[in-house]
Length: 396
Image 1 (cartoon, rainbow, N blue to C red):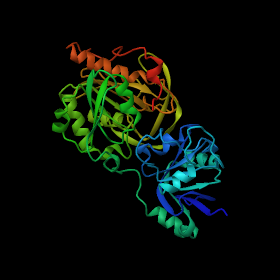
Image 2: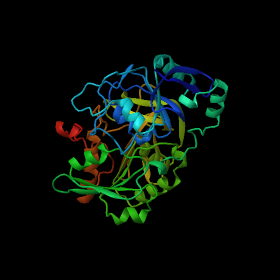
Image 3: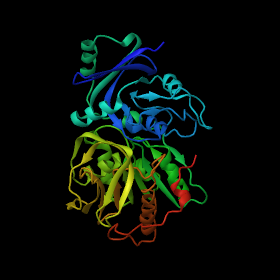
Image 4: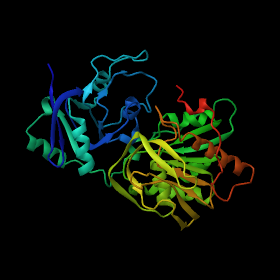
């Protein structure tokens, strides 16, 4: 027997379906993800903390759940919405079904929803607070809506501290160590230190509350700002730490949330997008070369600015280096007078695409330049390194 369930949006729209995963009640921000593959990586991405993820791909769960592709130690999404869940998973690496894993980790979901209609509604009205209700938590529409409206909004939410590591830890370099990097964990994914490890980088993952003294104690050749959830405007500590690193001219690379942290550190503002970018098929244009990369993204906030814009900051000139042609959103920054750059997308993307993987080699190039006391005056061409195919592939 199927257990009835309901997805209730804060504007009063209700979508009915069947319980999927755990039964009960969950609250969060309803967002949609356009990825046609990689649902396990999506679910375990800390950047989705406190969000109810709607999968636009109609069939979910076909490959089940394995023990190799997790991007963190747990599922982070607040809730899950799918149309047609697989009855039986089919993949040689599968250990159990997706619904079994969701239930085991207490993630409340709903299936049988017209996700095409739901996605169009969220595109038109914007990401919004929502709740999934099933089992004993199912109530009248009015009562469920009141519960949703009592939930916290994503604007103003400080969430990095809820997903960061409690203690520092080290991911060693594969083979000979070439560099040591201090990575500020704002919600880091497992494939990030894995990608750096393949390039001879020893990565020290530090809690989000780490001080500049904690960072310098690592004696880093570079600093990495990770992805993460929530509103970047709340991250005063991470922004101050970034400014301290920039003042010491330590090579710095930020992605996703880290891009927004760097942006705010050099004087840009941020704003909440209507529905954000979430998926693995989002184009980005490099303003310097005109090259287009297809990227993986997951963000609901963005930096203010215009494509190609150059502005002065306390750390010298900064350029808006990348943008999304779909909506003109800022997708990257490059500092001209200090060794720092960032992108809004994911060069470590798993299960792909891998167009942005060479950005890790640009980071390596910055650290090499600093080590040889020959830092380039700008990042243009600093790291256009041909990446071996094997470094672009996700390794387990």
